[in-house]
Each structure stands twice: as C-alpha cells, then as structure tokens.
Length: 438
Image 1 (cartoon, rainbow, N blue to C red):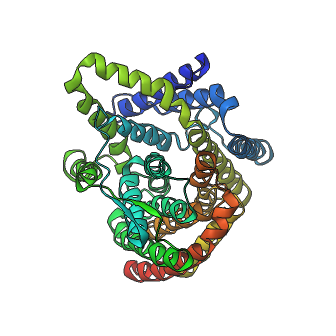
Image 2 (spheres, rainbow, N blue to C red; image 1 turned 30 degrees about the horizontal axis):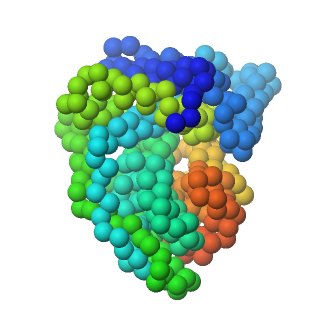
C-alpha cells in the first residue's frame, strides 16, 4: 500500500470531521454548514498537489470564475454577497459522497462476496452490466474496479468488457438515490418527486443494458469474451440498503431528505457491521479508511465544491445584472427540457463534467412545482449519457488510468450508444411532461 504523507492524512481527518459535523447538523441543535464547508475546502487545499492535472485544471478554472463573478457582482452591481458562506455550495453533496464511501467497510472481513459463475458471450456482457449496475447503485465507481480487476486477472480487458463497465455504472445515474448525481439534483430541485423520476429512469436504465448487449453482439465477436456474474446473495446488500433508506424516509425520519439519510445511514451500517469483530478492529478500519480512502476522493471532492462555487457566482452575477425576475425560459416544459438535455449532453463531449452544465442551467432557471421533477429527470439523464461518452468524465478517466484505454476511444465507441439513449431520453421527457401535465 502506498504510504500517505502527513498533509494527506490531515486532509482525511478534515474530511471525516466534515462528515461528522454534517451529521450533527441533522439534529437541529447547532448549525454546522460553515464548519462542514471550511473543513472540506481546507482538505482540498492540502490535497491540491495530488489532484490529477486535468481535474485540477478544471476545478481551478471553476473556482477562479466563481470568485471572479462574485467580485464583479459585488463591486460592479452592488450585489449582496454573504462572503463567509460562499463556500457552502455542494458541501452537503460531498458529505453524502464521503458517507457512501464507508460502504466499502461492509462485508469485507474475509468475505469477498461470492462472485458467481464464470460466463462468456452476450450473456456474459449482460451479466457484467447487471452486476456493475446494481452494485454500482451503492458502491459507485469502486464497483467498476472490483468487477474490472476480476475480469483483468484472466486477460487484458477488451473493448466490449470496458463498454459494459462504463455503461453499467453511468446508467445507474438515471435512478439510484445513492449516486452523487441524485444528491446534486435533490439540492437544486428539493421539491422533485423521486418516485416519478425513478419510474421513468429505472426502465430506461434497463433498456440501456439490453441495448448494450444487442449492440456489442453486433459489433464484436463475443464468443471468447469473459463476463462477470454476481451471485444472488451479492445483491442483498444494495437491495437492503435501498429498503433501509426508504424506511427512514417515509417512517422514521420523514423530515430529512434522502441525501441526508444516506449521509448518516451508510456510515452507521458500516460501523454496526464491524462492531461484532470488536471495537479495536472497528476503530482500526475506520482509521485506515480515513487516512487512505478519504484523501483518495480528492478529485471528486474538489470538482463538486468548485462547481458549487461557480454556480453561486454565476447565479449571483446573472441576478445582479438582470434582476430577480429574469430567467432563461418563461416556463420549463417539454421543449425546454429537451433543449436543456441536448445542451448538457453535448457539453460533455467537449470535456465538461455534467455537473457543470446542470449547475449552470439551475442557476438561470426558476422552477416551480412539477417543473422541478422534470428538471431533475433532465439533469439525471444528461448525467447518465454525458458521463458514458465524455472523454474527461470520471468513469472514463478512471478506466484510462486503471486499464490503459484511451478516453477518446471510449468516446468514439460510445457515440452510437449515446445517440440511441438520447433519442430514448427525449421520448421519456415527452412522456414525463405529459404525465406531470406541464
């Protein structure tokens, strides 16, 4: 294991403090928004030299633009800027991501999780997609490495295997309440109806898996392509976690959002699953996670915080320049939703992470009632399609770094998939708009 530097370990402690402060804030006893944001930003400063160059450049540009627009709004237009709180944006999303990371402490005490039978061919591709998709709804990007490394033990990963990994994970953004995309969207559209979004997003995700299998079978000879099949018990954990979240959301803590519930519930379950092995063992695992895994989240933490600052700067400047009554669209209906989806998805091809397009869009819209649900679906669908095809998306950069595949090759190979999924998303937008009567 690579030795961590003191500043990296201090950054891990700060990130853990940010999570604990966020959870404390849920009690309502004390406001913790500022301590959470300051701790996370200080951790990013300590980890800045370790952030990959592309991510560091992107985050740096977002930070500079965000601060620049706030200064222009304040100096040029006399806008009110609450400077102590400008770093708060997206801190709650980062806290959720940190909470989700603790899921890696569940079920690894000598139990690697039954991998299921070895399969190949089109059935193997479909099972690989299903395994990555359903485990990825909870474990996020770590699932890609878990499955990819198992497949890579036999031979270097082939294009069909890489595409199955890519699409299996990215399509989970369409409906998973545990994805960072959902956390961002719920923050931007707090009145969204998750059930309505999931009822459209989940079937669309399943179509993604079927289309992936059909398309790859046509383009490649899959006879000798190994797949990955999870055993049924491997799916118990993500299903159980989803059930727990729903239990808290509807009955135990209905006053908390799903993002908040995930933030405290997943670390709690992780701790409880380790306590039977003794408090010393549990503390050792938490310490190891804090000092190694949390600093390794530097790329995503910096991007989400930077995007939040950029969004605040843009929305403040636009409001100062145009007045509170201006918005991009007079209403957010089917046509506007389709245009917005296309713009965000196309920006991903240019290398922008979908969170940037989603954040910009939200900052220049005024969403009311059911419009928030339609916006939420547009944002999630753009995230799912954009991350699959974007050469600089997190998953494609991870596949490039781990398995040596070119991000631009992944983009080319995913263009037909992105085109078909985009058409299906446009149909889904029309259906959802009609359902919501907007």
